[in-house]
Amino acid sequence: MSNPRHFTSLLDLSGDEFRQIIQRASALKNHRDPNYQPLKGQVLAMIFEKSSTRTRISFEAGMAHFGGSAIFLSPRDTQLGRGEPVQDSAKVISSMVDCIMLRTDKHETVTTFAQHSSVPVINGLTDLQHPCQLLADMQTYFEYRGDIKGKTVAWIGDGNNMCHSYIHAAMLLDFTLHIASPEGYHPLPEILAAAGDRVRLFDNPVAAAQNAHLCVTDVWASMGQEEEQKQREIAFKGFQVNSEVMAAAHTDALFMHCLPAHRGEEVTAAVIDGPQSVIFAEAENRLHAQKALLEFLLCTK
Image 1 (cartoon, rainbow, N blue to C red):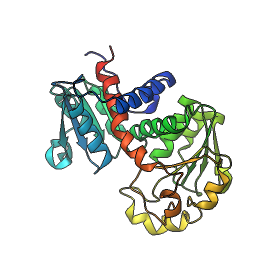
Image 2 (spheres, rainbow, N blue to C red):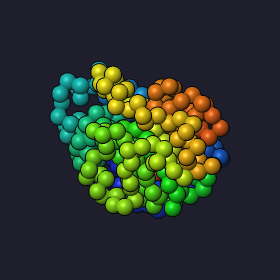
Image 3 (cartoon, rainbow, N blue to C red):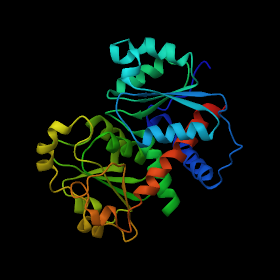
């Protein structure tokens, strides 16, 4: 495979390809055929520098459903954790497996890996982006409400990796994104700039949620930011998704959260456990979206 197709960012896809993967994910979910094993004999290497529940289970189960297998590698298990150059690791690992998924801190690790890998590389999460989660989120929206084109999404909270991938999704699927983040926690200016007028910034979650068709949030302190927890609790105090925020949204608005969630912090229990919340369908869709992605990268000629 001379030039493998990588998925280091949502922007590696076109809008049409994004929709195609979403539709395929729903088809795989609704008609699971145990005899369909397009990845029989193929191996996915999963490299985790950050711990995970949904990413690990979805990729491992997805490979098993497709007749392939997955190898779990933590920094303790590999030379990566001992300082082997990323490009050397990429060349060696890609010579032995059919696909590589990385969940790591620095986005640059994934892009460098992709440059030196002879097989597809998937971004399972970096500090900058979380594109796999957006495949599942958008699949969930499409299943409940149809195409998101022309709709409004409210992102409330940290301008983090999830927020960046929501900005990319708005560009590809053509929806409007309202972002309410406290001062000092906005998304990166260069990522915002690329989205143009599809994205609007707000300093108030109720204003951002006005007539939104989907409200999304994430924890106030992500993995690795625990020492900032106290200062973040102060900064994000007014940025909770609660009944008032949901009341400002469209009457049939959905609520999403990539999980794990802290009830009483970024979202109230009344919202996350309420009728508009689709968090468990969203979490399950990680499996189906990941299968559609693996099929897209490994079986599309």
